[in-house]
Image (cartoon, rainbow, N blue to C red; front, side, top):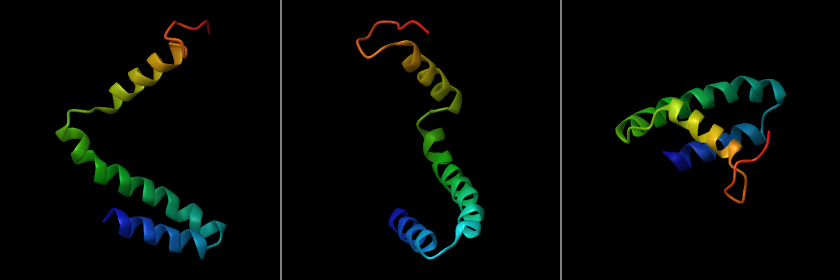
Length: 69
């Protein structure tokens, strides 16, 4: 299914104009979210955990110390 989705998106994005891409892109995002939702739920991953991870990565610098913001 992943390869089909990738191939279909390549065909759509290569042969379409800006209006079609702007309509199809949000639909593809919704499909990806709905397709990954059961996998994330089965592994007990919640979107709020992702926010915490991003904030932690932004506060901790590349050397492992807390960077000044």
